[in-house]
Amino acid sequence: MPLKNLYIKPRMKNELQQLESSALKALKEVKTLDELKDLEVKFLGRKGELTGILRGLKDLSPAEKPEMGALSNTVKKKLEAAFASKQQKLENDSLEQQLSGQFFDTTIPGKSRPIGHIHPLSQIQEEVERIFSQMGFSIADGPEIESEYYNFEGLNIPADHPARDMQDTFFIEGKDHKDHGRMVLRTHTSPVQVRSMEKYGAPLRLIVPGRVFRNEATDASHDHTFDQVEGILIDENISIAHLKGVMKEFLTRLFGKEVNVRFRPGYFPFVEPGLELDFSCLICEGKGCRVCKKTGWVEFMGSGMIHENVLKAGGVDHKKYQGWAFGFGLTRLVMMRYGIDDIRHLTNGDLRFNHQF
Ligand code: FA5
Image 1 (cartoon, helix red, strand yellow):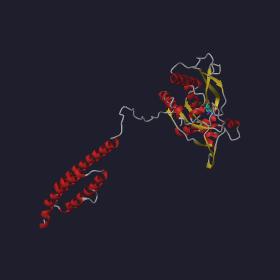
Image 2: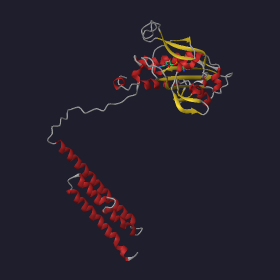
Image 3: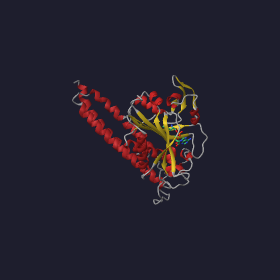
Image 4: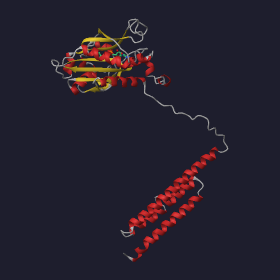
């Protein structure tokens, strides 16, 4: 080792000890947070005194380096702790100073932060998903901006069919799909029927909760944006009896009491036969009231056996498999559940309304 290097280690040790004691001494004199910051930069900053001393590490022998490295680390930690505790003390002092001379009533209750909670629509959606999951259904999703093909043609509703009038929609200009016609805001969750058959094939058992859109004048029970739940079951030897059983069980679990269901004929081009399903009014227990318009039954959803053309569009062997589908309005279900008299309350963002649930 060259002679001059023999002196580096004792010198460094000495410098580190000096630095520690002069930093601690200077720290005692500090009165403000600004002074503290300056001092910290002076001793511990990137170009501070400690860094200056550590530059000498490279000239030490390999045997000396670990010892001196450990020592400088100890000094650094000690100084950092001393600076942190001084900072805490100065901050407390300044708070005390601000409050001294002022009357401070410690008995005044604090300001509470308002806590958000889950929107009633999402609450019911979660319940619906839980019940159908328990019955072995998967939860699927589909795009809200949909091609005309999946929204209409794939569902056996050709362009010139009068059934298109039942679901007028919003078209997205200049975004036509290369094979599937214009793009639209989907008018129902039914497009996921063909999409899921294409993706998963048969057998199939799933529900699709989702947002839909219609070009409609709004009133207390109609909105242009609302939520639906689609249900699809495809397998061998499936009949409407399975649909009746599943829906009766679902509604009984959802409402927590025995619910009866009945079918009426209904028309939807994508099912044959098409059915409307009603359930027994829970308010009057079937005796007749304002909610059920004195009939004892509440209209609930469209449903039916999936049309052969739709199974074909989804690539499902219609000779081997049959299936049913249903679609109900989740928004209307929420209204029924909580006795909400205007659908528009659910989306107008008024927190006074939302906080009631
Ligand atoms: C359909 O949308 C069909 N896709 C349902 C279906 C699926 C039938 C599978 C057969 C097989 P409909 O247009 O009736 O059908 O709408 C279904 C439900 O959505 C209605 O029962 C109602 O609860 C709700 N709904 C319809 N229009 C509105 C609206 N403007 N505002 C709020 N809810 C609505």
